[in-house]
Length: 190
Image (cartoon, rainbow, N blue to C red; front, side, top):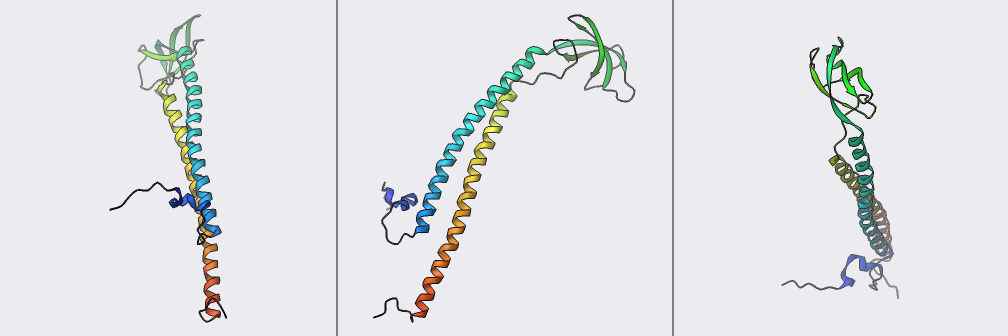
């Protein structure tokens, strides 16, 4: 039966301060780098939440402002551009009277059809306002990107340090094996 013990000395991170004589300096450095990477990755997740909140606030404000500044009106098609049937000449009501101009439509209407277009406060044609739920999607996307960047960055750091430390350990082993071969397999000479 396996028992669970809550002993920090058995944890890999406990190698930093452990008194085991078999722990080499490279083992302690590896444990320290792992601990630092863990702390930075956890902080990166918190920073990602803050960045996501800031992005949400900025985008939500912009999208709400777009919704207040733009509104839909019914326009009458007065002419069709021969090169592109989705671009038409239209006439629509505005605050200062009636306006005429070019409107971009999703479908090709006929002259005299009534179509819905979006205009800004001055009555100029504009794109439809962005739905406010896009602010949530933008914030989640940015927060995920920041969190992934932090975690991947720390993973790369640990991998690079561990690779370098493995080379150092291999060199130490080679040195020790050579010294055993040179002494005829004995470590202590009398």
